[in-house]
Image 1 (tube, rainbow, N blue to C red):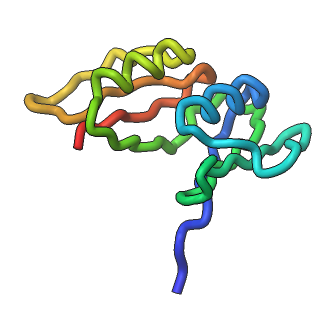
Image 2 (spheres, rainbow, N blue to C red; image 1 turned 135 degrees about the horizontal axis):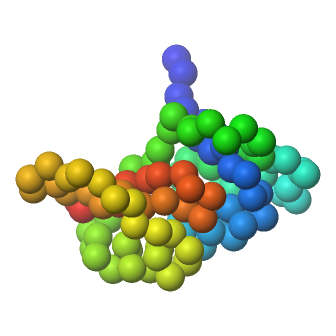
Length: 113
């Protein structure tokens, strides 16, 4: 049986991505990062690992995270203060998500649960 152990996120600015995602998810470094790779884990020890892999390609990445919350408005504003930006998106009626981009331009969704 397989289970997902980590999501690997391609980033161009490793240091900034460590700062952003650590604050956004309340994660911490699992160990000192390499020059091109870092592993973030939940501060409380429970949950999935997020690995940050430095990339040089300008190609769009084909991945995104869905972040679930009970207070979408507050979380969207908190993430924006951390460095996220709103993405111009064509939302369907009654969409339960907001599309943001991290400081490296990777998109992710904040979903109201």
